Length: 113
Length: 111
Image (tube, rainbow over all chains, first blue to last red):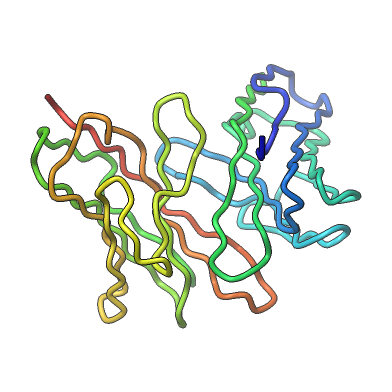
């Protein structure tokens, strides 16, 4: 089944403890991206990647890192999480052509205490 | 600056009533516009995109370049339409590939 898989679904951690949220897609998509969803603020793009080893900042990249070593994987790294990074995170992918729709993962609810 | 505005956080309508979810955008050019929907406990998924001009689940959206709007409409709301709706803009492929989402509108269809 074609899909975007995120892990974990839920994560509770403490301030400063490095964590990684994984994202994998099996559709051979070039484009992958990360979003955070907060009440009243909607979806905001954190980082995106046009292809392997090509990444760029979205609107809210501070405090996050990404890497794209393989086409299928696009992990989101929080080197030193803080409480203001408590949020619902979504990974998405698409083909790189005009007008292509995004396929979303099921989300990761992160709580930083 | 590129921006998508959804002025209503919550829209409540009765079953069978018409629905219009508003979306206005700010972009100096011809962006690609989308509506995504998130049903309870489900992933975000594409509802429709302006380029395809198709109607999905009875919803339509017309791009009005003069008013820079892309409002989502349905003539008769159903209870299963209750969900969170996001309008999104994507600049044409030109070196940047950011998606910009609005803040979302929660639609509640009352029985």
